[in-house]
Amino acid sequence: MSTDPDMILLEAEEAMQKSTDYLKSELRGIRTGRATPAMVEFVKVDYYGSMQDLKNLAAISVPEPTQLLIKPFDQGAVAAIKTAIEQSGLGLNPMVEVKQIRLNVPPLSADRRAQMAARCKKLGEESKVAIRNVRRDANKHADGLAKTLPEDEVKQLKEEIQELIKKFEDEVDKLVEAKSKEVQTV
Image (tube, rainbow, N blue to C red; front, side):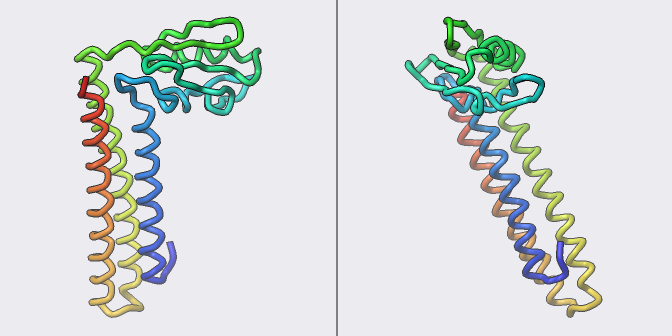
């Protein structure tokens, strides 16, 4: 962080935005009753010794509302993709069909829906912790400016940092609430 109040605010806002963007991508991967490519896009596949996201190794489509079709770009990756999906903890059973993998997405049980909703809340809390850490760092830098800036300007900067955190925490709450509701509806 820099020593200019505007830069401190800007850097804090960028870091908070990154945390919120990360939460959005994580929430997209949480299973609901419908099949969506986002469920498996970020499954890590051991591809010739390096870990790759599934979306980099295959085309993922939704032929039916409860089914995903994964067509690897390299046919040699089919077994590795199947293993990665089985080990991902998504509760999906991949079926290999020669050069592609089909995933049937079963309806979620009430217990599984509750688990998914709890996971949404956990991800939201982790995001809030990251945002609060950014606030802590920004406030620390603001305190460092106390030697060169008037006290009221430092106080104003801290108030603006607090407004930022409220804005981003509200956004996190809305994202988590929306995803939880999506998971809970049958």
